[in-house]
Image (spheres, one colour):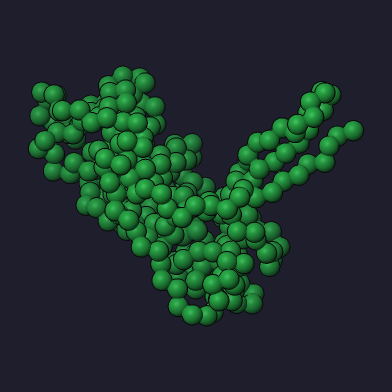
Amino acid sequence: MPRKRNSRPRRGVDNPIDVEPRQTVPAAGFAALLERAVSEPGIISAAYHQFHGYSVGNQLLAWTQCLLRGLAPGPLATYARWKALGRQVRHGERAITLCMPVTVKHGMEGTDEDAPRVFTRFVYRPNWFVLAQTDGPAISPQPIPSWDRELALAALNVSELPFDAYDGNVMGFARARSLSVAPLNPLPHKTRFHELAHILLGHTAEGDQRDGELTPRNLRECEAEAVALICCAAPDLPGVPESRGYIQHWWGQRNPIPERSAQRILTVADQILKAGMGPVGGGRP
């Protein structure tokens, strides 16, 4: 007899209270979200500052829904969490949909194993509301910590090497789990993000990545520089216009980024940012 499936939210995620029927995720996929973030200055920076603590993908997903509904982006929480903070979600407000992990248990049919198999899947649920949808005492956004290079490199198991390239157009390079930035680089942090992205995206498994202003590596360069753009914009570092120009030069202004690449970009950018910012509030998607 098949065992009954039992699913529950991951520990640390607020236990949601359903206040409306399930709704669908906005039609725009990750590729469309990233396309808008790349083409419109300041979007990622604003989204990350308002929704700090959530993944980059969920930040952009929440920001897009706020934009479509005319809501002011702001601190984000479940119905139960706002109530615990002394604020009330206004009657008739529609919840914001985010992607959240769910732990699923089920038995192994046709086997003698007693222990259920456990795995995690990701689902979209409308369980969150922004500050603009609530009434009550004022709530201040969580402050943003600075990004620490040494902390990030240690957490990501990446080393930084002395620069030994002779080509004056090379701003940096990545080899296996190591990177290097040119000493005369005008935007060293941007190049460091770019080279970290090459490593974490698996590009260095195909060989050394030497990146100058005239390096035509098409999709690989687009992916790495899009990660750099997000990582520059989040802590308000300079380099966003330069990143946007790099992407548009090699990938094109009207050429949409593939959705699979967009997902990889958002995942790696989130990984780099969190590695350099240290532990933040746990339990949030």
